[in-house]
Amino acid sequence: MYTIKSYVFPETLEEAGELLQRDTRASAILGGCCWLKLGRRRIRWAIDLTRLGLDQIEVKDGCLELGACVTLHQLETHPAVTARFDGLLGKCVSHIVGVPFRNCATVGGSVFSRFGFSDLTCALLALDATVVLHRGGEVPLEQFMASPIAFNDILLKVRIKDDGRRAAYQSVRRSTTDFPTLAAAVSRLDGKWTVSVGARPARAVRCESAAACLNEGKGAAAAGQAAAGELTYGTDLRAGADYRKKLAAVLVRRAAEQCMEENKG
Amino acid sequence: MKVKITVNGMLYNKHIPNDMMLLEFLRKYGYVSVKRGCDTGNCGLCTVWVEGKPVLSCSYPAARADGKRVTTLEGVKEEAASFGRYMTAQGAEQCGYCSPGFIMAVLAMRRELTDPTEEEIAGYLAGNLCRCSGYAGQTRALRAWLQDRPWEKEGQA
Ligand SMILES: Cc1cc2nc3c(=O)[nH]c(=O)nc-3n(C[C@H](O)[C@H](O)[C@H](O)COP(=O)(O)OP(=O)(O)OC[C@H]3O[C@@H](n4cnc5c(N)ncnc54)[C@H](O)[C@@H]3O)c2cc1C
Ligand code: FES
Ligand code: FES
Image 1 (spheres, chains in turn cyan, blue):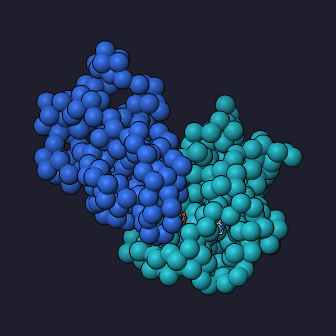
Image 2 (image 1 turned 45 degrees about the horizontal axis):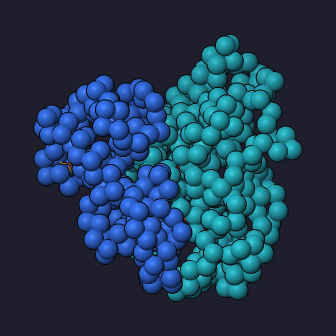
């Protein structure tokens, strides 16, 4: 469990940024705290963003915008989210513990942490999302996911082009509420596909060769094989690398088939 | 730091440690229905409502509850007892340690979902673990309760 010396509700983003910059190692941005509290950080300034109006979901300037303090459960219930991308964002978080947990954990905490097991970042990668950082500005999620974690900025929101793309998500878990053993997401817009694979167990990445198979009409099974071949998979207590590789072939195929089915309707 | 937290309609104007979690705050002031299970966000035993929404009090900073309305099982006693009778009838309770958190999640689900499907029920309650019962009794109790809708006759919200 962490310890906190000063607990602050900044009234402006500038104030939050200044507090963080005062000492980035001693300060911590609080998301839902579900993960943070499991650690043993000695926090000098705990910066609570919940009074900055970052819990909003908006459709603005042609984008779906998810504020950092939006909870995972909001993704399952907000009509602007459930009505887009075949409900991908709500579906991808629906196996994360239960509703009381998902009413706490946030988009900001989940995306900023760039966990390998993250369901949400895997789905967002397939949607070509960007993240908006207080200091760093707007950055493609793919680039953000490839960068090392430094707790020296504040994630303000996630933006996704409201381009009407269709999408599907697949994951395998050893038990209902466990972390994913492997996850895959696909999206399709005007015949152009995007594929991502997460919980490898390393961070989610896009898979260009699988997308190319789908773009060239080689079919879902070929895309699955491409994802198994192109990406690297590792071993941890949930699964071995070989098993994950086999899962990747199956999950990418299933997600692509699902997206093709949904496109028919 | 100083907080004003309303628990089951009663205002608490208190100084708290900055790193106190809502679970500790509630138990300190006598709301012992709120149980500490895993303390890691896994089990759901500590479920309470903040502004009517179910949350895990073990992971919710007490400071964040400043100015908010918190409800524990003690605050919905009658409805909880009514559902509890369905649990007893089905032998759904063994040690009973998981029941307060489970009941708070069930009552929240009833308010949020109209006519939930089996899949929706399982998804909503998946984070409320019970190590004794294997969930069969709880599922039977829930089905009977949702079918009878006793809250309508008993005039609950
Ligand atoms: C028991 C358990 C089971 C889980 N299962 C899954 C699962 O199956 N799948 C899955 O995808 N995830 C899972 N997770 C992770 C969970 O979904 C969240 O991603 C995680 O709790 C972090 O979100 P949070 O809002 O709680 O962030 P916090 O715990 O508050 O923060 C996490 C980190 O991010 C930083 N941070 C928070 N918000 C911001 C911001 N706006 N800007 C900058 N930095 C920020 C914090 O300083 C901290 O370092 C699980 C977590 C737990 C505890
Ligand atoms: S004690 Fe809170 S989830 Fe287990
Ligand atoms: S009855 Fe014992 S944990 Fe549920």
